[in-house]
Amino acid sequence: MTAPDPITLITDLPDEEEAGCLAELAAAMPGERIVPLRAARPDERARCTIAIVARPDPAALTALPRLAWVQSLWAGVEQLVARLPDGKPPVVRLVDPELTRTMAEAVLAWTYYLQRDMPAYLAQQRSCVWQQRPYRKPADTTVGIVGLGTLGSRAAERLIDAGFRVTGWSRMPKTLRGVATCHGEDGLAQLLGASDIVVCLVPLTHGTRGLLDARRLAVMKPGAALVNFARGPVVVAADLLCALDDGRLSHAVLDVFDVEPLPGNSPFWQHPSVTVLPHVSAPTDLRSAAAVVARNVAAYRATGRIPDGIDFSRGY
Image (cartoon, rainbow, N blue to C red):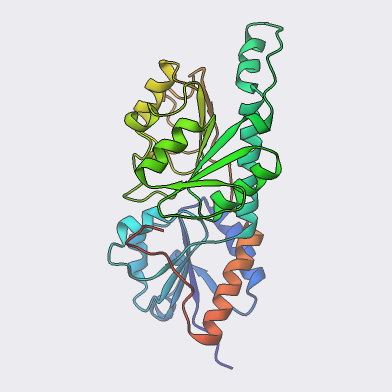
């Protein structure tokens, strides 16, 4: 039997992390030869039709002249979209049930953090203040989810199961069990004005960059809190800081930023109304991701059909 063409792995990860990716992928696909780009021979590069990538330099793809499609190990693909404007080669985003579960878990955890006034209790601890705050039930708390894709829909389910009132916004009309859904500019304003906690889960596209700016942040319910688990540029950082400084918003939980790692001179680090997280809301589970990739590769080898890719016109 003729061995299949090699698969190229392209990442900008530290050597140890890339080796871990390679080991999990190899274990999930024992019949495939997976080679890091820098170690691939000229003939292997010439024959490669599949690339598996994790935060790659898109220019590296030009080293693979027969490349038929790209499988991302991350859910976010905005860098590839920006640098491959003609939509070629097709890019397949990671759709991993484990990543979806982890994100929904994070949304629920940090919603509880805000619903139970944990930022205020932390401030009281630092000031040696012993004071109980009024309890607010989940049923009395409206959580607005901006983005009702795979991640947002699953997060909504977890929140509903926990007893929260949930409203959700999407670009186009969508119906979800137990969720008061809305869409369009008017729908976004409606969600922002009604929500005690706003959770941002939209992909970064030309249409969502700067989505939550000064104008839209001003529409938010006074004293509301914001959770950004999407991408940093979806929220205008300077405008968010102004809203927090003015007291219009009570707190922001931020896991994503315009520049990562977050620079040491960023005002977010020391701001009393900000919780900074180091992009940990939904880390890729390598074993689970490798299994998803293996299924995609096996289907392609069997049928020649490239898995459904992102829509470059939409950006996801």
